[in-house]
Amino acid sequence: MNPQQRKSNLDLCVLALLSKSDMYGYELVNRISDAVSVSEGTIYPLLKRIKDEGLVTTYLKESNEGPPRKYYAITDIGLRRKDVLKNEFVAYVKGMNAILEGAEIL
Amino acid sequence: MNPQQRKSNLDLCVLALLSKSDMYGYELVNRISDAVSVSEGTIYPLLKRIKDEGLVTTYLKESNEGPPRKYYAITDIGLRRKDVLKNEFVAYVKGMNAILEGAEIL
DNA sequence: TATAGTACCTTGCATGTCAAGATACTATTT
DNA sequence: AAATAGTATCTTGACATGCAAGGTACTATA
Image (cartoon, rainbow over all chains, first blue to last red):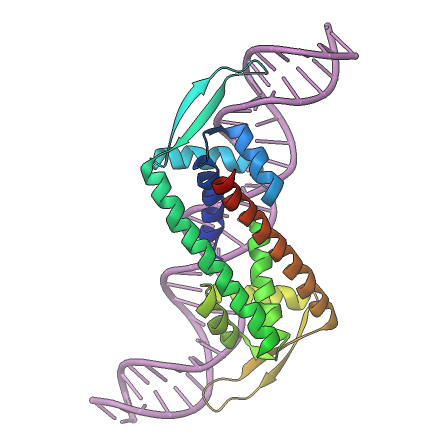
């Protein structure tokens, strides 16, 4: 996996979660970091970037537990990108498996 | 996956291949890049690093098709590291799957 | 009033990866 | 004989990523 692939995986995480429902940044950080450790300093710039790319839109919503939340909603472009990234991720894992099994079986 | 994780994946590729048989650098580059694109500028420094860490040893062998080849052989420490990295990789993929499936099922 | 939790974001640092180039040997073509 | 292409090693410079840490600000609790 090149650094691009790693970045793509995080993009994929965010887009996959947003394809289920709108979420705000802090929520995305917590959801993703449960599964594949990641920090705020990574996700917030990522969110800004994919918004600039048109993969998501945003809207503000007040909260009674703290400051207003910035919700992210996935766009059609974002949905298509999600599918592409998912295919790339699957291909990457297959490639890794080929090497891991090849090392044991061959 | 953090940058460390990505690095770990390449370490895992190299160690997994070397656990099957000794190989030289150029050969490793070609074998790995068939599955998960990577370049010489990445692998050669990686090989130097894991040698410094004691995960592999090296020996030179002449070739009748070009310059001498530097072969890499995995050590016991390298074999143990390979198992650790493999477990981490499996955990990472499971985490990604949880997010991908969660996004569809929940 | 002070601490802790929620929620946003930016900055600086360390690291990883690649493209490109340098070196050098062998084989093939011109 | 000279030039090209393939094999094989390694280094350098530029760029991107991701994190830790810090900054801001709101709410609730002690």
